View 1 (spheres, rainbow, N blue to C red):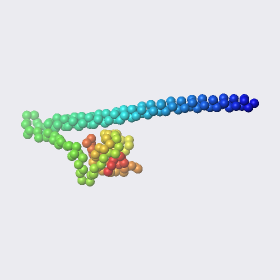
View 2 (view 1 turned 90 degrees about the horizontal axis):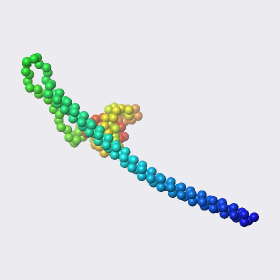
View 3 (view 1 turned 60 degrees about the vertical axis):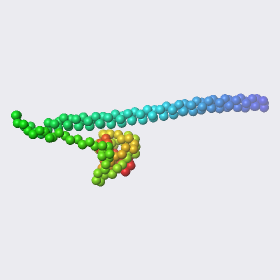
View 4 (view 1 turned 30 degrees about the horizontal axis):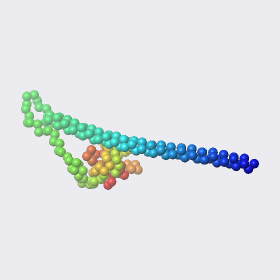
Length: 179
């Protein structure tokens, strides 16, 4: 009777050891899979970052192209300003050519009266046309971009700042700008 009982206990012990070995093997495989997934996640994060940087560059280039096109259109249209004269009457030479002062990045960020300097605290800071979350995005600023804070306003439960940067003016959440 004792032999049968010992044999049964040994069989149960063998089954428990085999189950433990199988569990350890599965855990080892799971750790390897987690490591693979962490590498894949890191790579995906890098790819998303590169894509966002590319989009920011494309937006900046598009904005520059728009400004150049607007200036060119204004200059081309400005040459014809001066009024319409009756047929055959010569007027004075047109002095109405649009003068576009060159503004360097330093001048853009020079605060005026009642303005102060600030800096974007977050990457891809959305500069909006109006002070609310659903307003159209005018530009995205990189973290660390310097801005001029022109005005502060409270809308609902949020504070908003009207800022100016190299890419123009717009509204941002006050919590996203160091000021």
